[in-house]
Length: 70
Image 1 (tube, rainbow, N blue to C red):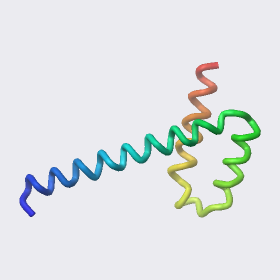
Image 2 (cartoon, rainbow, N blue to C red; image 1 turned 90 degrees about the vertical axis):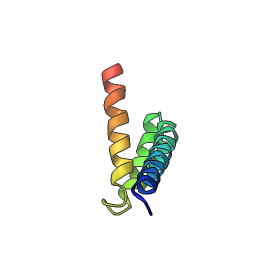
Image 3 (tube, one colour; image 1 turned 135 degrees about the vertical axis):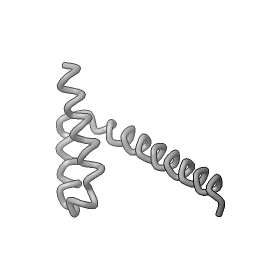
């Protein structure tokens, strides 16, 4: 693989990861009531912390954003 091919592959991989993360963020944003939020947090808490790290980070950021918006 040439350097240009490697760079293209890396960029494609990053774009795919970003697309997947944005999709996950939109899915998690649907848990917008206190009951739904408690439900998803309970589900996430059942999983290994390292495996659920990304989901917890997204949920925490969304909660902080909601607090800041009022």
